[in-house]
Image (cartoon, rainbow, N blue to C red; front, side, top):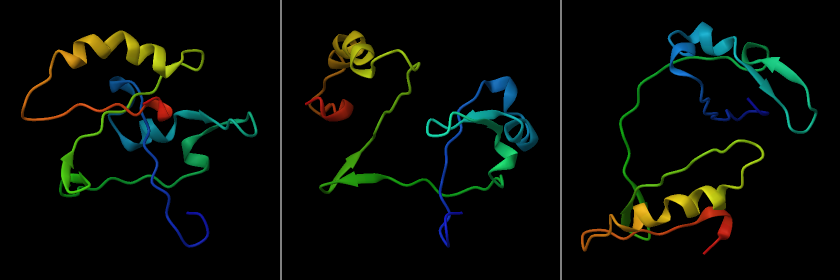
Length: 105
């Protein structure tokens, strides 16, 4: 919670490390600002819940957004460049493909 507002955070971890909430609570995270490393349980209250799916729209058009995280020394645009040919091969008259890697296009 920041002030009176909850902040949603997504945690990505190996499948064998996320069987229980306590597994996730024990994962360590680092702060790029302070360079400190702490277990998630020290800074967050974890819980689980179910929500209904939501179809996102952009300018009135149904939109699926695909995101990725890279290793700290890898440039995301370089990774995307490696997949671009395969992604563009999926082209169809039923949908469009647009890129937005850090304002690249």
